[in-house]
Image (cartoon, rainbow, N blue to C red):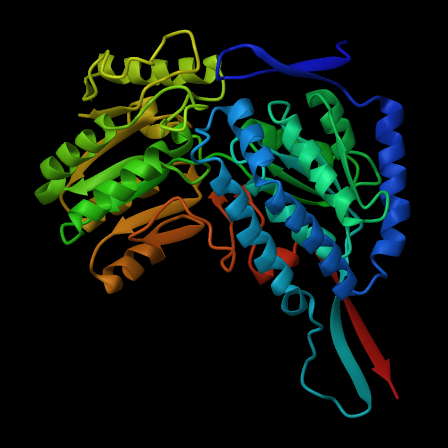
Length: 462
């Protein structure tokens, strides 16, 4: 069994770094330390916890350039865009800190003579965060900040593609002065991660990743106990461009929504339905904008589209494209238009497909890459049926001038978030959640505190 692992950078296909896996004794020590530390951490005042967590956020913001370089070298996002993740991290973290009093406030029913009655939220204990590589700071911060502010201790197991991010988080919380054991990181393989999920010291697991990974985590967590699990899994997020949409705005935003981070976004746009009256003009505009991307080495400040995270991920999307074309789809970005596209590497150029249908994998299965299929529709009803024809449901994006129509359609879309005239964005004031195979649970918003705490009722007489 291997005692270490390597990270291959998609920038050049070379080994970027190596890290040892945490030993069994290190894992055991981390669990015991978290349990001991939580006893004191939960009894710190909310103001004290907020202040210390806020200092860690300050450290990450002050070290934005280090964070950005870690993102680019590990996952291939252009260096011109990576600093934006730290801005997003700060927005979410500061918001969740600011609403802690509301999220954790006692709930008091109507007064009853002779009694004092209230419901109090208390921390669960130790929260395990299993974070993915695609937005390595943003996805992790969704749980880390509210978990700590609520009085839990946190163990972070980050993706094996992004260990530098875990280490930067550790440095931030250490610099902030959190007590030993309150925030810890571990480097683990899949089997040892599932053992950690099943450890009796773990009281909640927050996992972001694949559907298969979510099933494995859920089964491990439920093997002997009844702890909570938050799961953000697959997605195939749709957009619908109605006949009354602002065409230029829809094109500009949906190209970005489909291809930002090389399409490797949890809520990125993966399929588009356009009213037939706008279809040709939309497709022409979409292709023109896509052809203008500056695709290449992500360390070049001029690049605005980089490689996928690894060659195997690019190979999967290449096959989706090839299978769709074999089944009758038409690829609108010609071979060779983007010189950096290299088969066998992580460098996969963006592709736009038409003449697609839901019998094709590219319109049915999560791509998580720079490819988009566009279909014409004749009505809201047809668009709604196609949007719902998916095992996933994270977000759906509606492009229209008619707010009433957006609300009507939104009520019938099986999804966690309905957007009107925007996409691929998380507002920390709103619940981040999904339906169907996208998973379960809520992060962000005041409700984000609820799954990280338990309710205790107080019933006092006299």
